[in-house]
Length: 113
Picture 1: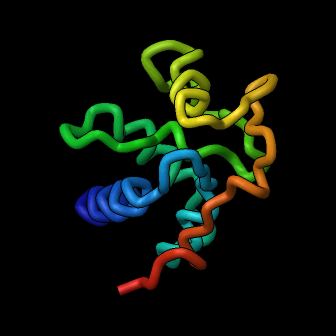
Picture 2 (picture 1 turned 180 degrees about the vertical axis):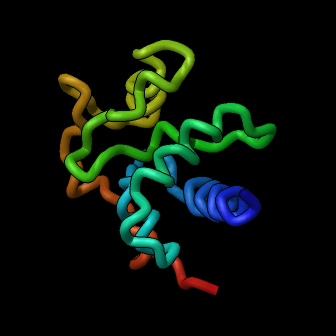
Picture 3 (picture 1 turned 90 degrees about the vertical axis):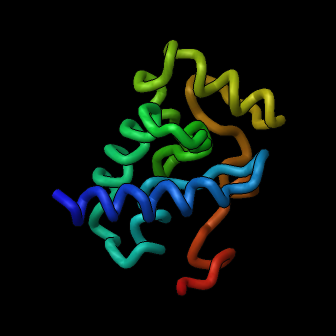
């Protein structure tokens, strides 16, 4: 159980670094953390982040196609889109527009300690 808790904390640390107006994917975070096959676990961490005392910008994490696949885990089904749009990100039919342009890859942007 502790290893999952540690992994969640690592995920939260990466997500906290996603710049406003940018998005990343569950898979990109998993790959950065050396657990490329753990995209689903990153998703579980994002769901758990809503109970965290520290604000985690989980709305900036989408699936590999830019879809708001985690939107049902927010206060309302529209909250994720509303938060992204407040940062200037256009979303149409639950999909981030200009996804490749807005994509933030932690493996390229961060150095792993």
